[in-house]
Image (tube, rainbow, N blue to C red; front, side, top):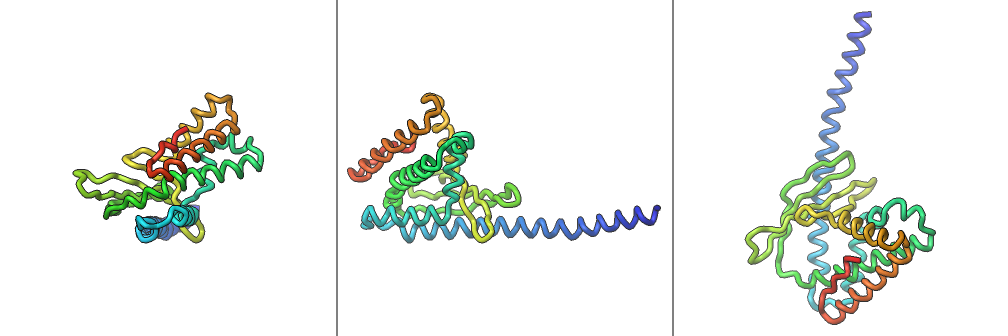
Length: 222
């Protein structure tokens, strides 16, 4: 009996010794991969989106392609809306919502890269959140600014790539902020998803009008 217990304990010890280095290796790979992913995305955005002479249509097309490739767009949009509202929505409503959500993000943010004036994004740290997610902490260095802007990127590793699932500016989550705004709007409108989408359409029109006139409309809030 004693020998059996010793053998069992020995086997457990061997498994622990083998598994712990593997766990550390996986975490190191996740951290390294997430960091490389954000650095590569930064280089891509600077090279493709910062030309001030780029036509609006081409600017938005490039921005849309980058976000579709590097962001977990559908997951973000579903989480922002809320699981209950997503499940209750009909297929056509889901498709319309996803289209409006993407179009609004493109119309609101794509042209802002044309104001680029040499800012640099430096990775300060990478922190593991869980087995598949890491937080890449960066600092945006701006000319004339005494303090760099803190921007953190929550990155999820998939089978063959990495995807951004949230961005935090000075600790403020864009996804959580948007979710709170949508939730507040829906509560004030009897949880009417059609009312929310009509609101998104209005905001999209304002964003496009602001883009055409060279001004930035506050289109990200209901």
